Amino acid sequence: MSAADEQRAVDALTQIGATTAVMQLDQIAQQAAAGQWSYTHFLGRLLEPEIEARRQRVVETSLRFAGLPWTKRLSDFDFCFQPSIDRTLIEELATGRYLHEGRNIVFLGPPGVGKTHLAIALGLLCAEMGHRLLFLSALELARRMNTAFAQNRLPHYLKMLTTPRLLIIDEVGYLGLDAQQASMLFQVICCRYEKQGATIITSNKAFADWGHVFAGDAVMASAALDRLLHRATVINIKGDSYRLKEKRQAGLFAGSVALESTKGSHTQKSK
Ligand code: ADP
Ligand code: MG
Image (cartoon, rainbow, N blue to C red; front, side, top):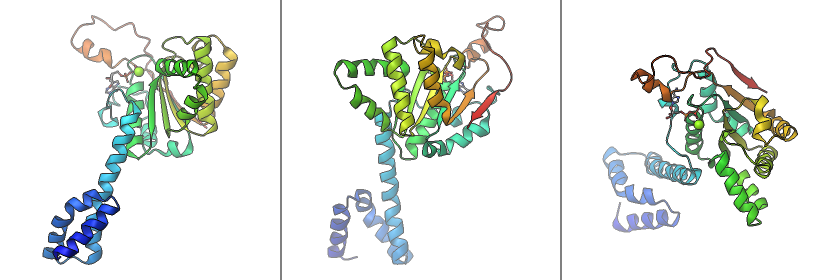
């Protein structure tokens, strides 16, 4: 490739923003000449790293806005420790089909059984598929909505919550919401439902107790559940806390811990 040809290629690639291709042009052109590659093979080899770099940037941008509290992957999850979880079902969710179908996922169970871990792992996969997501604890969501309400921006904030492909609301029911916060959470669930946006919820409260989650308003709780569960996969985890596993192994607990752990499997999928 003559210097003029190379400059022309660099200028063209720069104009279309193909910065990775510009950086690799010289090296790939030399490999092409040495290997007597066809033009199409050369073009493919030049564009592959460009496409990968762009994909990576999309993932990084998505993760920057996602607010995931930690990095947890499905590969780090010990399914043997938690036999009540249907691994095949989790693997199906990992394909991301639920995102396109606007299906919700609800992880239920006592503390430490991996609800947040699994929600984060699915969130990471969502970002790696090139989608936007937002992770918030129920309390943080309520706090932000209170602020938006006080600033007369609640409709705007609710609209903003409908834009990510996935919204993860963690720890629903851990701390009681007041009537206004409950009503706002209800509005979020309604907005996501109307836009068919997938929502993942983790909760330590059985659905029967969701009246308390919604500040004692059983009618609102039932209306929220109606929307949430219309298209949803419910994963009810029944087992021991993983957090206590190491402590127990280290002998910090003499006998079995008085956890509400019920052995046995109950994983259900609602249509
Ligand atoms: P929950 O949200 O149900 O209270 P977490 O997902 O926060 O529980 O899990 C508590 C800790 O234990 C986290 O660090 C998580 O990564 C880890 N953990 C939970 N279950 C498992 C598991 N089955 N395999 C590996 N790590 C687990
Ligand atoms: Mg949690």
